[in-house]
Every structure is written in structure tokens, then in C-alpha cells.
Length: 298
Image (cartoon, rainbow, N blue to C red):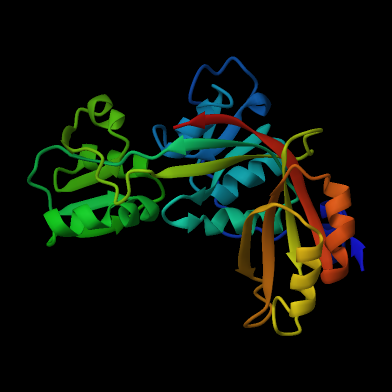
């Protein structure tokens, strides 16, 4: 058993698989004077929550149709970093980002917390459809089902993509940040419609090289294909290691039913010491980076 660096792991297994990576370069959010390589990539179009998070890191933002495409732009050197959502306080993990962490040779170098405020906007109250990102629709489901039980719900790639539809089609309302209503000449029909008031999304910055310091670290852990996924022996080792895990998330490995890869965050621990303590419990361990919370927009 051994600690496997991400680059070595990817080279051994050929795991760098592009999943749905269809890029759409919709331009730089701010001035184009800075070279594209210094920009950060994120899910567009302009005005999305991903865009709001990205602006906390860099005012040069390049938009992509998918999170996979934004991550691939980092790998190719097209942009310096990608800003992607990884976790929401209501809906939980963002699956696409977890898959990117497993399949791309990238490191987490920072995190940003962004408050999510959903509002309903349209050209008029006479709409029949509501368009938004699936997470936004789910997070506003109580209000929408109560106030508009007959409306059709349409999932799009981002909240701002829903706003674009609403600006061109009077039958469509959008769920997005309230600031986008005035910016797009839409009527603000309701504000703060999210199911839970304390709605926060955690975003991560991904780069090709790890940061040199930080207070939080992330690992990928694979216990092997023999059931159970977390045996008592594994749990004993994790307990005895005395690690303050702040997140422990399971994702199917895609190899077999009941076979999982675990995403684990921990704070205030030396990554090398932690890996040495827990690696006997796992077939392999991947280091995803050490980083700090650089902005908490709540």
C-alpha cells in the first residue's frame, strides 16, 4: 500500500477521462486586456452564482457551458484556475465537481463561500414555465409548488441561463439572484424564495499546482472492492488517527455496485502525517491539496 500522487495515479490508470466536456467560450467578463491565461474559468453565462464566486478571486472571468469544460480549460492552460461549486448547505454535494476531482489532475488551492438568495423574475406575472439550474429549482421547490402548482419546470445549465430565457420569452420565469432582475429589465415577482434561509454554497478554486500552505486539506480515499465499503478495521484506523474530518463524502467508483471512493476534508493536520496514519486502511490515497477559505460572502 502506498500514497499515490495524483499525477502518478492518473498516469498509471489512465483515469483522466473527459466527461461531458463540451466547451463554449462566451468571452471574458471584464476587460480583455489581461491575457486569457490569467483569467479564471467558471460556469456561465454572466450573473450566475459561479460568476459571483469567481469575481471574489479574479475580475477576469471566462465562461463555459459546463463545469467539465471549465476544468479542462485549466488543464490545457487556457485559464489559470477554475471556480466550481462543490457543496451546498441544502442540497449537499455537487456531483459534477466530485467527479472532476477524481478524473482531472488538478488541486484545490482555495475555497469561497457564497450566500444563495433566490428570487423569481419574469417579464410579467403571466408566465407558464420556470427555468433555472436544477439546484436552484430544488432549493426553491416549496415556494414554487405552493404558489405556481401548474407551472412547468425546465432545467438549464445555470441560473443566469434561465434569466436569458426569461428575457426573450414572456412565458418563462427565472429563479436567480435578485440583482439580475433589474439588470435584465425583468419584473421582480418574489425574493428570498429558497426553502431554507441559511443557504450557502461552497466553491473551490482548482489549479494545476497545489498551494504551499493552508488550514484545510482534501483527500480521495479508496478502500478497495471487497465489501463492506468501510469495514470495522477501516473505521478503527480512522478513529485511532484522531483526525478532525469536516467532510466525508462517498461517490460510486463506477466499477461495481457498492464500490465507493471517499472524499474527505480535514483541518489543522499535516497532510503527510495524516496520510501516513490512514493509508493502511485503503488501497490508495490521493492528495487533492491544502488551502484556505479566502472569502466568506455571507
